[in-house]
Image (cartoon, rainbow, N blue to C red; front, side):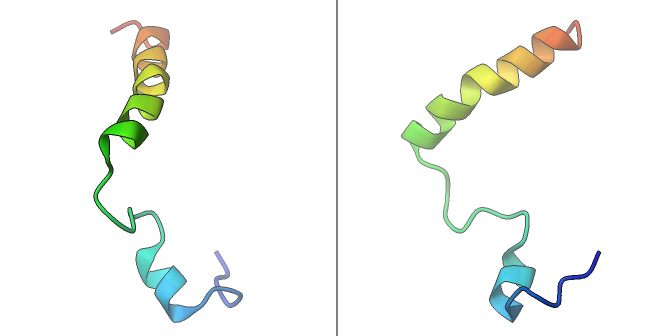
Length: 42
């Protein structure tokens, strides 16, 4: 994938959290994660 449009910092941090996730962030993700688990039948 071409990443010429990204800065060096953006390329280095791609796919990573910029900081530790907080409780609010995790609470928003929880239903999505559980929905995917249920969809997979686990």
